[in-house]
Image 1 (tube, rainbow, N blue to C red):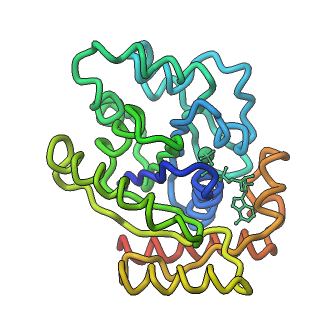
Image 2 (image 1 turned 135 degrees about the vertical axis):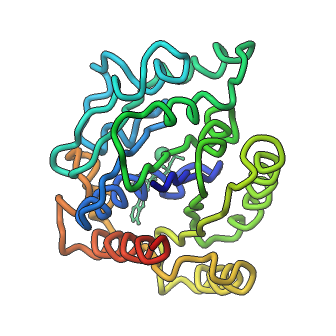
Length: 253
Ligand code: ATP
Ligand code: MG
């Protein structure tokens, strides 16, 4: 079982799109996948076809200790994976956990008590280096960092790398950076090409070979509650995430 935190404190870089489409693509490769939505925006929940406004229980109840993870998991039929959904209630967890013991290890504990076995567990993090993200980094085996190849991309990366170092020292000694994923890539954009080259020379084989192109189908699919693989399998976006899934499976064999 591999627990992968998909994180970047920068907003709108493609974390959720990566989670939903990678979940569906791993499932298409016969892997058992659980996606955990850790963002109060609940975009991974909606994008998986689950109505976030009518949730009886969500990941919020798991983190505050009111429910077991098994009790909140639902099936995303079309995508072929399971999801622990989230909605705005999760925004309260940060405050409620402030004075609790072991507040950083809530998710790790919840995963340890999980009944069902999965090949991959994907954690969709919020755009912040907050307590929920620290919970994800504490529970994870490794981190995937989606990023857009633009001018400020590398700057934000150092804050994230520092947080990962702190988590390694205090909470999760074996946490690794699994890879950096170039998202919304536009081949015709010179700056994107330059930043991409810099990224590879700086991080070497930590950069996934697969590049996710900017593709309208990836942006449209969530409004139908579907991964792009189901919405339009032939689209360049869906194909790129299939390629990423294969790269990850090979890497983890
Ligand atoms: P947040 O930080 O708010 O959680 P995020 O990092 O999860 O954002 P997404 O929600 O995945 O980012 O993507 C931001 C927007 O860009 C969304 O509208 C999404 O549909 C769109 N998008 C993501 N990836 C692509 C892509 N490869 N091509 C085109 N549009 C994309
Ligand atoms: Mg998101």
